[in-house]
Image (tube, rainbow, N blue to C red; front, side):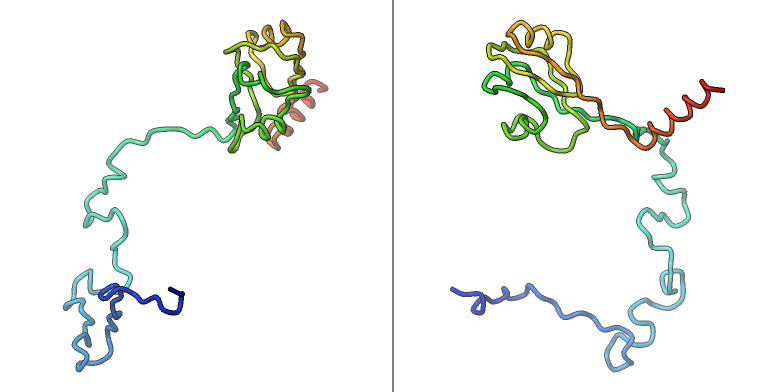
Length: 165
C-alpha cells in the first residue's frame, strides 16, 4: 500500500453549502437565515455564552481564584534519589539522570531516604534534614542563588534608593 493509493472513506467528506447564490440554488435571497430577526442580521450576537439578553452564566457566578505571576516552581528531589550519582550534583546532572524534568525555576532537595555516596550538591534550596543527611555521608551543599526577575531587580533598586535617602 502506498500514499497515492489511499482513499477517503465514503461519506467522510461533505460538499460545502454555497449560500446566497441565487433563487435557483435553493439557498438564495435569505440564504437559509429566515426572514428578519436578530439571527438574520449580519454581526448578530451569537457568541459563546450568549443567553438572549439574560445575564450570562459566566457573569452570574462569583469570581474566584488568583494566579501569582511571581510564583516560583521548584522541582523536588529526594536525598535517596541522589544515591547513584557521584561528584557534583547540579541541575544539569539531575536532568541527565532523569530525576527532574519539565519547566521549573529551581531544584529543592528534600530529606527522604538515605545517602552513602559523597556528593557535592549545588541547588537553589535544601531542607535542613536533607543537608544533615548529605553532610553525614561526607558530602557538601552549595546554594545557588535563584534567578532574579526584572520585577525583583526593580524592587531591589527601589529599596536601595530609599535606604540612601
